[in-house]
Length: 132
Picture 1: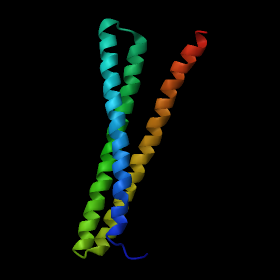
Picture 2 (picture 1 turned 90 degrees about the vertical axis):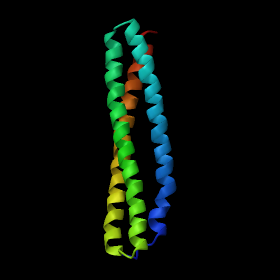
Picture 3 (picture 1 turned 120 degrees about the horizontal axis):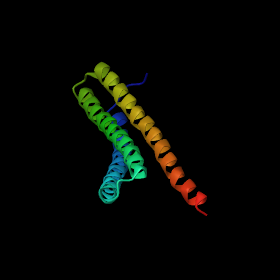
Picture 4 (picture 1 turned 135 degrees about the vertical axis):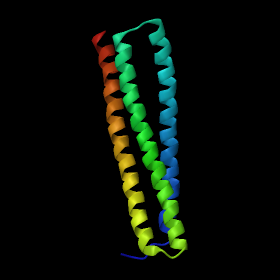
């Protein structure tokens, strides 16, 4: 393997930052949906609303996990840079590997969350199509 330099983990900063921005936007959108569903549920206790609340709750927890693994990846990249700076290259390689694994997990959770979101939207579409 080639020598790990300070620029290698630094290259992930912009990518992780953009991913975290997207995750935060998802989180804020879910918060708004949850508040709306809460108000609707207080007015009318409907089983459809309960199913929507359960779905959004699952997606919210997945988003939280995506954020945790994304932030962990960024922190491990910073730690890698520090270890390179203090000439602990052998440890830095392992820490950077964990940073990459953490980012992979975050992105895998994103795929799962997207699948759940698509299924939820398909229910809305089929409801519209069935009421024609």
